[in-house]
Length: 302
Length: 156
Image 1 (cartoon, rainbow over the protein chains, first blue to last red):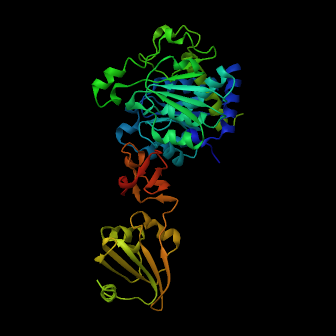
Image 2 (tube, rainbow over the protein chains, first blue to last red):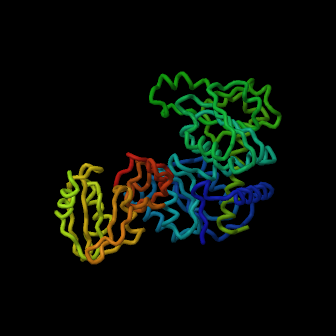
Image 3 (cartoon, helix red, strand yellow):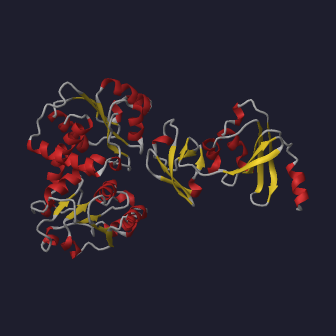
């Protein structure tokens, strides 16, 4: 049976760990011709330069060929072709499909239509599982473990799909503690807090971004986006509260690392960049190794 | 209304010899129930009554299908719109069994996803939901993973 990657919860804890192991192997030796002679379709029904370049780098380092499009304007979608027909056609040409789509559930549907594996590179506000796996790889690499970690999530915790997926994945491991720092409008949704309570996992909610971060092993920053606020005044009030500055890091733990899915706007001041606790650019590079690992796992190359 | 009057009311829709009587259907959903069960596509004799008085529902409908005996999977499809429906199985003019409907674990092709950004609302796709709660009814879309709950539930 073919294997897809659509939602982070499709995979077991054992599979997360297998992908982490493979990612570490690819970090040691990124260029391996495992995809030689294979064609991978890279279908971006919504532009995302960062994610697309990361995937295409991973495919290239594995020796695969890429077909596809970078934005829907240059695809048959602009002529009114259905997703069903696009996937039906492309899946006859390619050995695997990587897709980004603005509509939620598009990737699950494509996986049902396609006889070849589908990797979800983001479907609207729903899922972006390869981002979660690269976040996990960054955590494992810098902390040496997934257990007993105190993880702070900051910014837009309501709409941020990356924090939701990371929360679900990290809940599988032993004794995590979560701290949520967000304005009232952008709090962690009740369904996720409910899920934590059911698993007996401790979490704390804060409005203020203060020295409580001294307990953190990981700070996961997200963008507070203006368009999320119904009242622009509210945005003006909070936009400068959830900004991480270098002087806030003086009393933090030595093993602390700061993650961000990027792109950042102003939520991490550039004076943090030279601090050795800033990890977001390396995190992006880890994305290439993690995606090589995911592709190898799905295509049974390793 | 006396129980005698109630009996007369029932007889407004003629009795059947063999088959199934589906009672306590909310009147506004009679034709939905007919469509969901595919009763508009079968050859059996069917009689129905609607806008009948009902203490519980205000106004109810009833369907009698001759020589038809539903499987549980089949009949449970109507549970979302007719949760109080009761089935009487008739053999030789006698009620030999009574059944109630139960909400199934999965709902296929009946309900619309509440999320306007869901692929199922933008392309012709049969909807599929996992039932994740019963009071109120909560459905999780197989595609966008969002929940459609209680009054948000609308039929396709």
